[in-house]
Image (cartoon, rainbow, N blue to C red; front, side, top):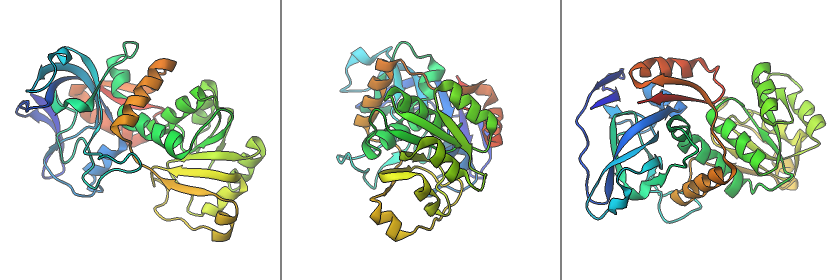
Length: 330
């Protein structure tokens, strides 16, 4: 089978690999589409811990069950599914086990003609979603779902700030927050991205490169309850200009600054919570898919590439101009 492989020399290429063998309690998936995350770029740059190469990349994927292993219900055969993008979350819903890992390194990923996964890692694909849309959901939407529901405790009427609108998690967070009937504000350095977010339902946005961006946000929102944050400020005190008492800052990335400073007295006197999150549990994934189906939410796709043009797709993500996900159609 063909697969997108990162080799020992950190070269990304499409090459022939052996088709995986189905083990007991597993299913063989014929992958119909996969999506790219920044995680794949970090792996390619050697910036991800525990590099194990060569490896087939990709955590996001959707497809058809082509074969079932022993002890798997044959009703799954020929079923359209979405793949839960991790292994060994563990029994605790609050946080993953130390064995938890994401598909696509060190385990074989979704950017291939076929992949085997445990049957517990698949969920039926809602019929209203295309293959490309289904593949764009797992990592980004699951991260946003856990951040907003478990950590953010989102409810109707909350004021939500989503930083770095345009990325996959940010766009998923916008769609989810609007479905919860929250009031959404965004940040970006691109006027185009802010304007587009407003067409989707965001109330307003600010350019985070403006020196007084936090003051602007305070004036337009009158106070923020939850921040869905891909890039916490290097001076977290900036947030105290607009955070409501008891507000939650939920961060899932560090694309801007890997370190931040904070005024501790303002932090605890205002009962602010600063929470880290990544991905989510299998149960949260099932709840996410059910919520998406109930509200007929579709992920935003920036561009689709045929699998054979996978290297071009990676180049497109590196440019950072996308609004939504970049997808490979297999």
